[in-house]
Length: 339
Image 1: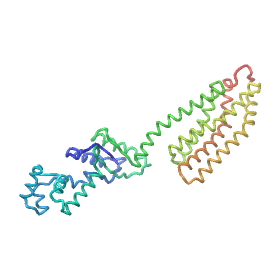
Image 2 (image 1 turned 135 degrees about the vertical axis):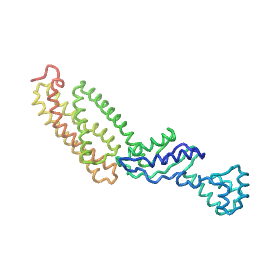
Image 3 (image 1 turned 90 degrees about the vertical axis):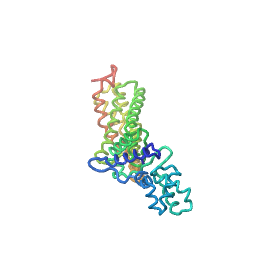
Image 4 (image 1 turned 90 degrees about the horizontal axis):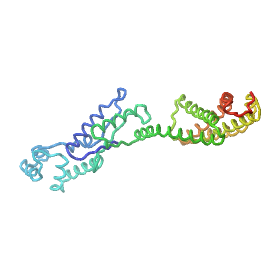
């Protein structure tokens, strides 16, 4: 549904007709994105036709002289628009059944397509809301509406809701990722009282998130934007502990005098039971929700969390130890490092 500024003057309706033609001329990849357009200038077009006195006399069977007198009395001039003619005819022909029916049809059309400030267009879209072509089609529709009717236009409907969600998602995604990243980085940095180690841990978990979402992309599976935002926050907050546990064990062992190789082996041995227990619980719980829940959006959150937990566990137990070894001199610190 498209709303544009509009009144009931001939100039307003002329602008609406131009807009209808502009919408019908839109093409996306060579196809027409929009089908039927219902508006006052299309569905209600008969009410906007001008009639001369002689035409009215011929249609109604009235005397031409009487019709001309009627025109003169109402200030219509040589011709009058059908809707205005019906309004005036209702006064002198209140008991006429045909006039009453026409006036009711006119009021229905006005109620559907005309408001105090805006004119309404009901537009059929030929593309599904999730179609990749829907976004450029809506862009073209809004551009045409603003070009012919100014900036004060509104568009709503399923396709527009998906369009708005997509536009908001890009900004929200960046904000959520940045806030989550820096908030957890600061918390972990305050715990370890250093920056290199928290950077490694956050990098690994962020990598797990990218892999998790990348798998969905490779599978061609759609990701509902709320599912993505929720899973990013939960996966980062819940699985960051795995990296903290392993890294803390490694740093303690290094500062106790163990070599890097032995410290890594012992840290993994100590942390693995806890990491696997927590990871398997989160993976299993998410999988059960994803498989058994009949609500798509909740099911999607469960499946993403299940996959994310499994990927985080795998990276913490494989990639993180390698990064700890590479960044050993920044992590162990002090004079206790044993080469």
